[in-house]
Image (cartoon, rainbow, N blue to C red; front, side):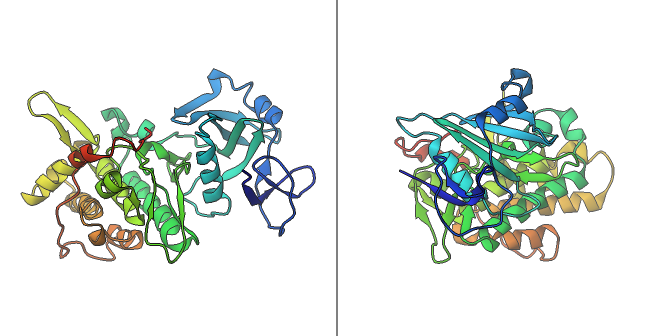
Length: 355
């Protein structure tokens, strides 16, 4: 099977190539994509040295590298299992999704390398790694994330999703929005990354049926149970991420006295008893800033709107941006029961869920 991408060119002859590295004729397109050689990337990363490894995920490792022109990049090495084509699908999806996107809150793809079974993607290098690495996990990390920084990250991710869902044609559903897939540049500006699970939607497509993929805790319940994917699946994931950013809590916490509890459940409980301010990250509330408290609570209400059980009640991402910027009030909006993470125990056992 051959997959054609007329959106990038071979360096040597300036003709479009497909992912097998073969030339083909087609309409010429302006592009900044490059087709790198394996040797070039090997030199740039010092032989993919462990010292240069900056991350690792379900489909391979990521290395910091310096190209011959001095550009610092990140090289994503995809693990390809040829018999099952595991990884190949993710490579194709990522190329299809990113070959012509232009947005300040999406990671920039420089190009790729395809040699034999080797698959490499070359991105901008993000100095501050991921939101999961820099923000979640310990109080010291969270202290460094001021309210201004958290607002900027939340709005940046929302704008990226609004662009993918509503401005880009065909529309793109990311399918794996989570803290580790939000990268941070030197100014801590967010860049949504890892489009290996992304799916393209035409204008007249309301949903597609696909195998369940993503990360437990961020998956919308209706998608996890039925495999019915919509743009509202990403909206749910964003809502969970927003609650994480404002509360500073993990999706699932374990308490010795009360056992496991889920962040979405906790937020719903606090909303119903009008105590949402108690869920705001304590490191933000050391002063007596009533305006900050009100704004943080508003952000968490937007998060709850995004994780409502009924998909038709979840807002579009463009509406989310208006609520986050207070252009649209959330005070008069009724928030209904969320899709509880506990319901994900109903996920069909024959549908694989990568981490």
